[in-house]
Image 1 (cartoon, each protein chain N blue to C red):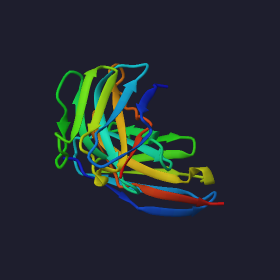
Image 2: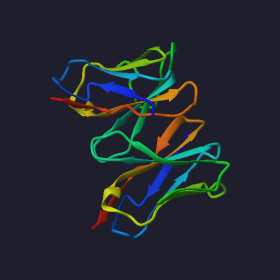
Image 3: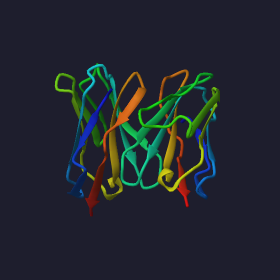
Image 4: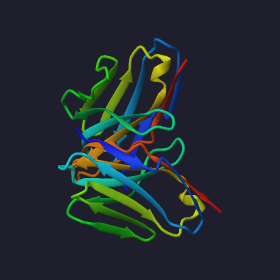
Length: 115
Length: 111
């Protein structure tokens, strides 16, 4: 099956710092990348959608200046949480869409804890 | 936009019994309905999906039904086993875009 690598799998940082999460599709090209956030015992909430080479489209209520998304290539997308605060602590999951098949996959997820 | 509702939020069954989880969606243009199983702290795993041109799909102990007119779809797990215990999410999307998830159902299968 398709391989999606997301890292770091967990990160702890101090309030006010920035954290970058990488998502790579290792054996397929991803035209579209979805970024989800999941708070404990809750569902996955779509944060933003990005297409390779284009600016990301953010969902209502998600600050684009706080959650910077870069989708520079068909195999790599990054999410940077800037000036992180404790309320940003969450499980972040990337979800690339295969260029060839349109199939969706999920990264392993990154658990962010902001102290 | 699409709105997906899922019931029940928790479900406890005895091993060997069946489990049914139901979802409704709001956007009649949605045409792809996957179901995911998520174990604690891990990524969702696709267990079965159905497209709008099909009414029912089965894969061993798992089946999904879709009623486009009523805009609802259901997951059926038969002969449940303890390893089926997890959180299950339904989702709906148009051509794999803007996938929206239900709130999740925590299934517990008691041995």
